[in-house]
Amino acid sequence: MIDVDTGQPIAVRKYGAGANDVSDMVYAIPSAPGVLDVDGDGFADVIYIGDLGGNIWKWVVRAAGTHAPSSSELHQANWSFRKFFSDDPTRTAGSRSRSFFFSPAATMVNSILHIGIGTGERANMNCSSTLDGCTLANRYYVLKDRNVWDSGSPSTIDGRATGNSGDLTDVTIYEDDCPGVEPKGFFFTLATDGEKFVTNSEVFNAFFFSSTFAPDISNICDPTGSSLLYGFLAKCGQGFFGPPSTASPIAGTERTLDIGKGVPTDARLSIAPGDGSNRLIISKQDGELINIDSGASAADHGMMYWREFD
Image (cartoon, rainbow, N blue to C red; front, side, top):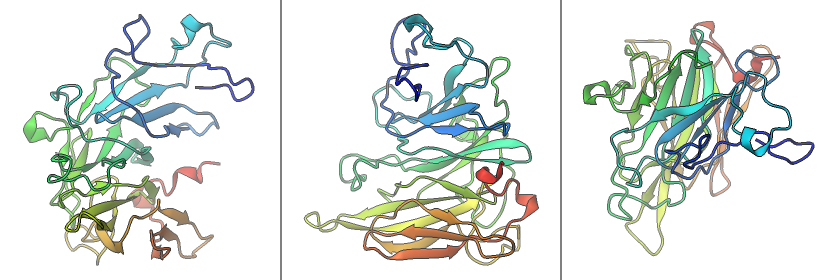
């Protein structure tokens, strides 16, 4: 963390064997952090950031820190830092992992902070089971932080399914329904070989939106691919698209919308005043704009949009 006036570091957490270092922080971190003002006072409270080893780190910066810290104080003792999530705690360090290349998104549902983030080999778009050894199917995770200030002795969320000694519900098959979800969250797995999340996540009206790219390497000299936009409820993973579900009509029956060939950009929201139409806009590789009605707000979904805080 850098002081914008002086350019000097005011807080540093890093890998190492020293007293204030983090010994298991062994993977690169390519993304910007997700910085949240949870209590709405205009100041950052908590920071989440993923790494290439399938881990998410959490830094609680709400308390007063040390002003003009010396080199031995840069860890900022009042700001707790820990591993918040591991996609598979049993995996050997350095082995193939589900990687986080983008910042997490966040929303409040029923007063619980929900963190959404997808995995994918953004640095190798053609990676698949038959090219470069990407055999782990990518996933989207929604993690519930019920202890935002990290009081007591919080534990790391185990990203495996509950049936595999983990903490999360696998909701892959529940596109048209809103199943009961474990207290720590859920995930769904991508079905297409080589499919990967390649954009930041956006959140609106307690729906997460993020896009994937799946390579077509049938012609290795001129590889192409196609993209899908995923939209789903933060609280359970039920899809945004399609007709309302008869089992759970608060959302739709499908998580995905085919947005065609090429690599998509990050989704951007256009929020209309009053009863106007809210739009989700995506620019594609060929310059085409995808413009989607992102739905009217509904109080039972939870927070409409993170920036609704004044």
